[in-house]
Length: 271
Image (cartoon, rainbow, N blue to C red; front, side, top):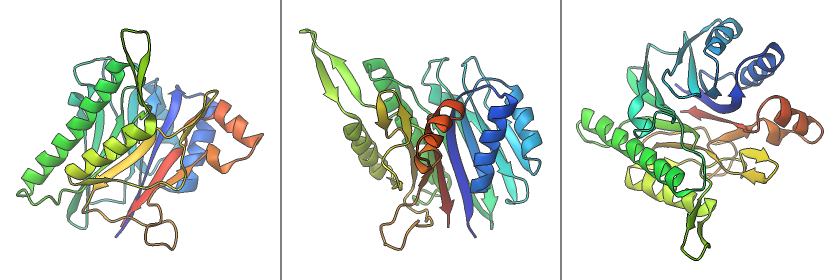
C-alpha cells in the first residue's frame, strides 16, 4: 500500500480568510494523506485547518520560537498515528524550530515522518546550526535502526525547508570564503548516504523564488530501504514533485508568490 506526503513552507502564515482558502485549495489538489505546514505564526491556524480538513487529525509544535510546524494526517489512512515534538533539533537555540515527528502504522509497519525547518542564513552560526541539525537527523536514523535490531531498515522520511543556501565565511582581509548552495546540497547528500539514507530527486531545480532569484531550499531525505513512486517513465525519474508557483506563468505566478507563498510544496508517494 502507498501513502502520500506533502511538505510546504507557507511563509509567515497567520491565517486570514482569503489566504487560508488558497492554501487549503493547493493542499486539496495534491490529496495528501499527510501534510506539514511550516512557518505557522498563529496557533489559531490549527483550528482553521481542522475546519478546512474535517477528515484529518492535527498536531502543532509548541515552544518559545515564533514559527511552528503544523502536521495533519488523514484519520482513516493509518492503523495508528503518534506525534512527538523533537526539541533536540533546536540545537540549544530556543529561537529555532523543533522537529515535528509523526510516526504512522500501515500494514503493520511503522513509518517515521520528520518535518524540519532548519536555520536560515549564509553566516557561520546559521550554517553551523544546519550542520548540527542534520547530524541530529542521522542520530535519529541510527536510534531507529537500533530499535529494529541494527539492521538498517528503519523507515525514516525527512522533509522540509532545509535552507541549503551555503556559507559566506569571513576572513581577516574583509573577503569571504564562499561555500555555495550546490556544494552544501552535495555535502548533505553525501552525509545522508553515510547514514543509510538518500537525498530524493525533485522534478524541478528550485523551490523558492524571491527578489534575489530562485533557490533550491526544500528537500526530502529518506531511508535507503524506502521505495517511492517515480514521476516519469525513466528508471531515474524524480521521486518528488515541486508544486505551486513553478506551475504558473506570470501574472498568475507573481500573484501566487505575493499572496500565498514564496516556497513551492514538495509532494511524494511512499510505495
